[in-house]
Length: 170
Ligand SMILES: C[S@@+](CC[C@H](N)C(=O)[O-])C[C@H]1O[C@@H](n2cnc3c(N)ncnc32)[C@H](O)[C@@H]1O
Image (cartoon, rainbow, N blue to C red; front, side):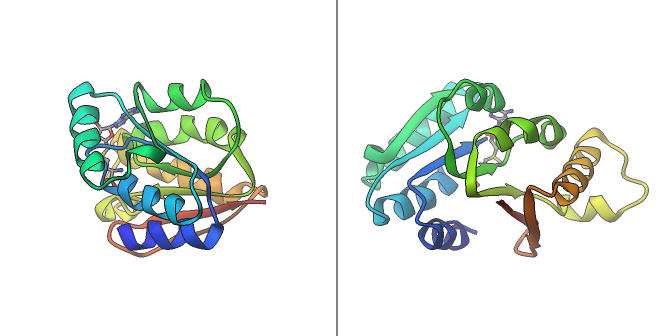
């Protein structure tokens, strides 16, 4: 997963990356290495848990990546809504029932040619299980339908791990 995030950052030449739901900073580290190797920029690490944000800062400092990372403790969609400018990559890994409502905000903040990435598109296979009707599974299903129906995106799912959405903002 990390290598894919690094590769996409390098291939797209991304300088501005926004993560929704960052946790301990594993994905942040790969984006930050990519942005650093693209010549510098900013990667937004956003999580609503203060302790996690602090822990992530410690790990990312040990990797020497803190210069390109902006740490924010907040609900992630709200943080994106309140952040100015367009992004080259927006990566979503928030709670799955929040995926559908995040899409218009993400779209507004992606530049032309920008990439929307989202994790857990298979949701451990539950998206294909007709008995699964919980809000997280429904969230992933509804988000998937919306992105693939949107003519402003060219979309595919990379079947790596739990499925990674790769959608280019046209
Ligand atoms: C799956 S983990 C993150 C993993 C990380 N993206 C990675 O790949 O290394 C998601 C984290 O985001 C937090 N989170 C979930 N929904 C969120 C939201 N709406 N706003 C902020 N943080 C959220 C969770 O509490 C958790 O710490």
